[in-house]
Image 1 (cartoon, one colour):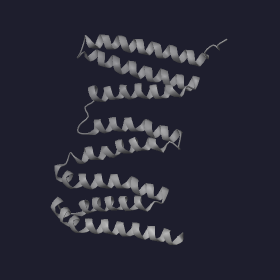
Image 2 (spheres, helix red, strand yellow):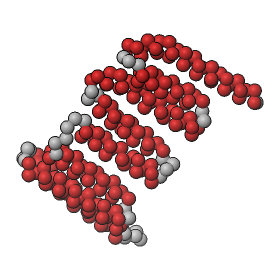
Image 3 (cartoon, one colour):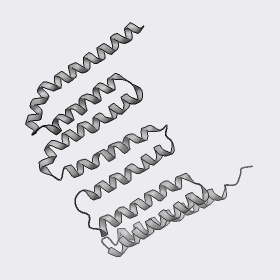
Image 4 (cartoon, helix red, strand yellow):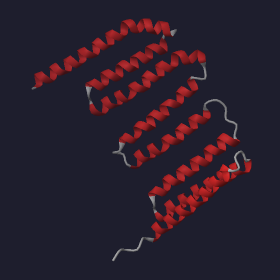
Length: 222
C-alpha cells in the first residue's frame, strides 16, 4: 500500500499549482493588453506576493526548492520595477541583473562548500560588471578593458595554484596578470604593445624554465 503524501508536500504542490494558473491567466491578459501601465504594477505586486508566499512555504515546511522559486519571483518583481518604474542611468541596470543571476550560485556554494564549481559562473558574471562601467568612458576603456580582462582571467589560475600547488597554474596566471599590468601602466595601447614584444617572450621563456626546473627537481627526488 502506497504512503500518502506528506502535508507539507501537498501544500507545496497546491501553492505551485495556484501560482502557475495565476501567471498563465496574467500572461493571457498581458498578450492582449500590451503597454498597459496598470498591468505592469499588477505583475510587480503578484510576483512580490508569490515570492513572499514561497518564502513562507520554505520556512514553515522546510522545502529548499521553495527558496529558489521565491528568489526568482522576487528578482523578477524587482527587475520589472527597476526597468519600468525607476529611472536607472548607464550600466547600473544590467549590472544589477548580472548580480542577481550570480547570487544563487554563490548561495548554492555557501550551502554546500564542496560544490566549488558553482563559483565559476558566479565569478564570470561578477567579473563582467566592472567592464560595463569601464566601457562608459572611452578614454579609459581602450587601456583598462584589456588590462582588466587579462587580470580577471589570470586570477583563477593563481588561486588554483595556492590550492593545488601546481606550478603550471602559477606560470599561466602570472603571465596573464603580468601582461594585464603592462597594459594598465602603459601610457597607450601602442606603448603596451611595444613592451609586450620584448617582455612577452621573456615571460614565456621564464615560465618554460620554471617548468623544466620543476620537472628536473622531481626527477632527482625519484
